[in-house]
Image 1 (cartoon, rainbow, N blue to C red):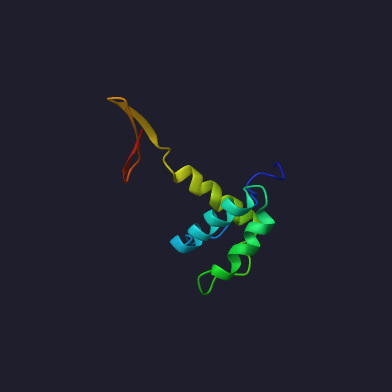
Image 2 (cartoon, rainbow, N blue to C red):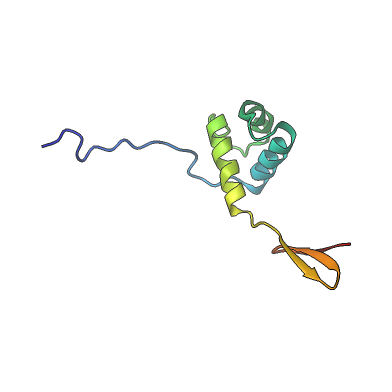
Length: 99
């Protein structure tokens, strides 16, 4: 019998509870200021805005990067629609007219 069969290491990849809208907004705002390569700064900036009862590692660099990646995946890219010499940027919530 092979020694590795049936043995799997379970990795804790991040928080199991979802981030609140406020936490996600703080994350996105911090990434806008610090960039998506400076997770030390992002993590430090959003810690004061955590919901009560969050564990100490809730805003670790790794979890912030992972959550930001999930945010990007969940965001639908705007679609450009050309119509009568006007360009409209359309997404799920609104239509913006560009001239």
